[in-house]
Image 1 (tube, helix red, strand yellow):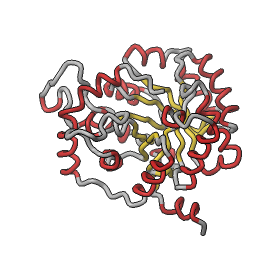
Image 2 (tube, one colour):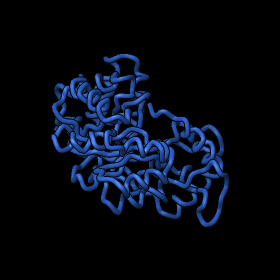
Image 3 (cartoon, helix red, strand yellow):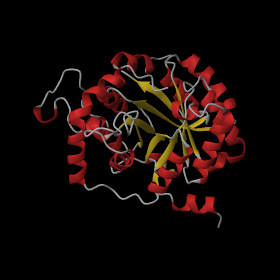
Length: 308
């Protein structure tokens, strides 16, 4: 067995909810961190290293460089498509526009079928109304699923847990991707009667995650490090691996992580092979400590975050 095959065999996998598909617990986020490689050759090398290191889930979107990330993944998909689960996302809320862009996504990704297409970055109640309108993107995705253009559909959200909860309860999704990190969980408005600040949301962990579990959706975690805002230096920060360990100790299939350096891919996949869940008491204590100093800043940051 060669080194790459050994790595793939030993990276832990979990079932992606009702899809029944097994994916690696660590997924490669192919947004701004992939784009930071700067050119196709370097980005393709990073994607190949991730696959060789056992990652079997690639996460992209049209909005990542207006199709550039999809194009770079397509260069890998030409020869390695069967080795990974492929998820992309679509931003327009109009169904016709979404379909046109996704036709281009198939060409950029050099595939005849996408495994999962998410509605990209649900924000507030008005946004949900646009998504679920008769001529909206959600009905377009239902049709694409029926036509086998995509196997599964989902929705992502990094800002408002309550509106994601509503969307998951109301509609027929297969998967969902949400912001799950220690700082956004520990201290939340309304939790145990506390209202810390009117700009603070409840957490995805408390509000949307239980609905996703009840419906057996494939659950993907993102914003594990708060876009690096939770990483040291500073006494009220942490290291990336502890933050990742916290998130992977939740009932998620995988954590989507951007890795802008090859060494980060090597380090994170090596750690994932030895992952052990964080004890519940330790999770609670860690989360409260990190959240006390960081939750409000993250809620404000993600209120204007474009996720691109």
